[in-house]
Image (tube, rainbow, N blue to C red; front, side, top):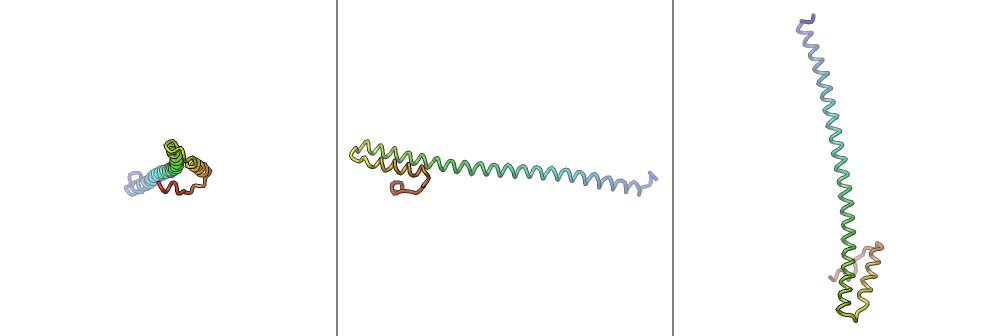
Length: 110
């Protein structure tokens, strides 16, 4: 009976089906894990990029406001008769640092 070609064919078919199914299952699980890990890394990368962009924007705004004060101080050094200009810039800087975030006419005129 072990030499019967039909029996060998059925046994070979069953072994091939079981082993093939098992290998396909393992490879699919591995591919899903890899895909999940890539998606998780991409989400983390997007979150880091968003945080970096927000921080960069805040630092840019702060730097610009500091430069406004510097430019007002330079103008005051050249024209000592206008003491209110630096005080206005300093007041604007303090107001913006507290979070108002509106654009003044001083910023738009430059």
